[in-house]
Each structure stands twice: as C-alpha cells, then as structure tokens.
Length: 175
Image (cartoon, rainbow, N blue to C red; front, side, top):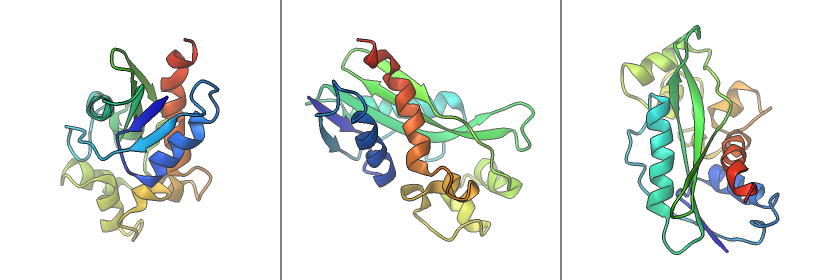
C-alpha cells in the first residue's frame, strides 16, 4: 500500500507517519511526501476555502498510490469569538473516488493585531506572528506552530493536525 502526502511540511508529514501506525491496514504503508498546490490563497479565511485547499492538495497528490492526504490550515469565522475568527486544520484523504474530510479543534489567537494583519493586510498566520513579535521564527509552521507557542508546548502543530487526520480516517477505518 502506498500513501502520498500533499506537503513536505515536516510537522504534517510526521503527524501522518505517526497516525498511520495506529491503523493496522495502513501501518505498513509506504509514505511519500510531495509538494503540491492547494489552489487556494496562502492564508484561507473561511472554512470552505480551508477544506477546499485540503481536498485540492489530496487530489493534486493522487496518482501512483492508494490514498492521498491533503492538509490545510486556515481560519473560519466564529460568532462570539473576540476577533471573529478561529484557526482550524482541515485534512482530506482521497482514494481516487471518495474524499474523506476531518477537522481539528479550533483556537483563537489572543493577539487581536495578529488577526488584523491576517484579515486586513493579507499576511499569513506566521508572518503576522512575526510582525507582532509573538515569534521570531519565520518557519514556525514547520516546527511547533503558533499553537505550540500559545499553549506553551502543551499541543504543537504536529499534534494539532493529527486530530484532523484522525477525523478524516473515520470513514476509512470502517471499511
């Protein structure tokens, strides 16, 4: 069995490698990570666009494999939240016919300026975090992510995206 991941982001690849070990029918899969386009904006600002980006990555990665996995981080509007937005990770698993989608928990950044820079100035989450001084790691998304920073290491980006993959695998695990 072969699984292709539509990203070369180290945190996301490690998440897939770890999660697949928990599923007997996927544990021995050969895993290949490929850089593919999401065909959405650099920083999705809606749940629809975030999910579409994950699905596009899965479809764009599919080829010589049994399953292709796409992951996309983005924002969604959430009523009663302080900034109006929460960050969410979407995962799509494509088998050539069916798309299986899962989402992570969502979180809101406590720094209103970060969201202003994302929404009004078009920066991505990492760029906004760097501009405000929240972090000085230009590649934080490949490491612990801003979620790691905000939770003081209690949950990092790898653990965060693992949740969306587990949710997407519900349908495959029932087969």
